[in-house]
Length: 298
Image (cartoon, rainbow, N blue to C red; front, top):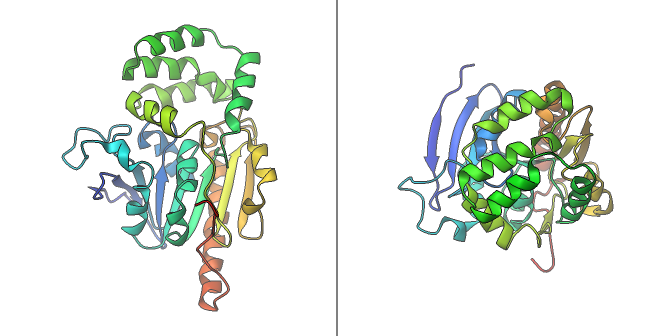
């Protein structure tokens, strides 16, 4: 079915754009990584996943191209990432999908636990331990042009220099055979260096999940060649295992697994949709709670 297009903003300036609508129930909210890349980076993921119901691209205020609109508050980052609750509250049967840092944002907002009917975490992590692991990988797998681009960005942090740095580092995200497609995905995104600066100062180094899914139907999926975010971190996190949590590794794929293996990504999302349907049935008998487990420091 041709996508019904709809765009609107929440009270804090979170933008939702409906990009597909088909048979089935549910509202699937896709939150981008980066930050600073914008939800335009997830068009290919939406196409690959083919979720039932409606698919929405979500941008926090001040991220990606969600800037300069009347709905954006004067200090948009003051509402990060908690404003994502407004998006979840605005629709029924919400499944939130976070890519990379987008997934980490979701796990840092414990209020979401009681508002969702499903969760998907793509190439994401339960805590900031992925950062030193990636730094070691990058040190042992240097790329030409990255150091110069990083120095230029450090001297003049603007959107254009962020784009140059991201493109220089692109080979870390994709297998060599997908390099051209990966470059095309990243080349024309609405880069936002202010979002990067906020995350660097307030989130990246201190992040740890503040809730776990519990009985919430959850998909944790990544490429088996993801060199950015070490997926082994999930193994030591007991709250991310169990009958309601699906772990899927996408063969021959990197940090954006839908680029290299969209069929396997589609199958993983179909499994999550099936699991969410089962959870609906169980909830009728009181067997399923969607509150998750809040961190005691929460």
